[in-house]
Amino acid sequence: MQIVIVAVAICGVQAVCDETGSCCRCSMARLRRFFVPGVSAHIIKRGNNRAPIFSGAPDYRRFLAELADAAGAHGVAVHGYVLMTNHIHVVATPDIPRAVPAMMKQVGERYSRYFNRRYDRIGTPWCGRYKALLLDDERYWLTCLRYVEQNPVRAKMVLQPDDYEWSSYSAHASGTTDSWLKSHPLLEALGRCGQERAETYRRLCAASVTDDEVRRIRHAVPQVTGDNAPLGPSGSDPGV
Image 1 (cartoon, helix red, strand yellow):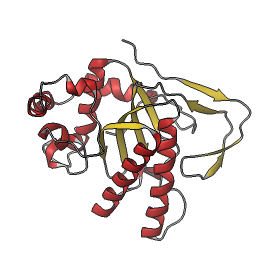
Image 2 (tube, helix red, strand yellow):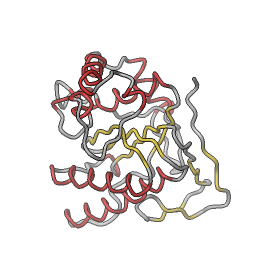
Image 3 (cartoon, rainbow, N blue to C red):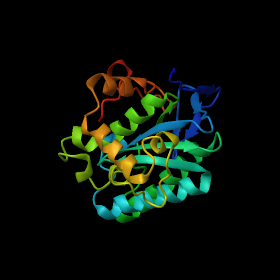
Image 4 (cartoon, rainbow, N blue to C red):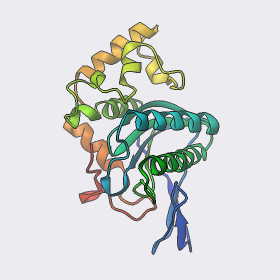
């Protein structure tokens, strides 16, 4: 199946606001993303100028609390995530087309207020808008989840994905989930019970995502998604 990215331009817009409510001027029309109910998305959001957005355990816990609250409020099922030092990845499925934008707006605004108060700073901690890729290929869905949860290993922060505290890997690999994380039919298909599904998932993750799979994921992210900022050479996502 083909991976589809859906976006349309809003013409004539010169002043736009990002998810934190901060306004900026654009010389190009802003792109509005549309999401398909029931179709998962791989969401990526980075810190401003690649600066850290998490400096300690309280920050990670606060962001997860805000994400869980926003997902529940707007009808988004979060299946997996990883919180890196200066960016985040989330795999989630919306119930309605505008659920993901509403969730990311709420998370961006609330975490920005917390972060600025805690570190006595002003301005947005975020680098423009989030990037999002629709996942409508069943095999690619599991590959993307593995890619997300193996980020800390690729970044050489840990040796194994279960050594990293701030991801959903342990929930999937242990057969138990956080109360706010939602399963997915492809995860349910891995086994007849939680233990069997966890064993199957651990076997899948024993192998690293291949270089070709990493390139497919990074190059699938659109080069411009409304903030007019290229991601890197040839449209690639230069981060892990």
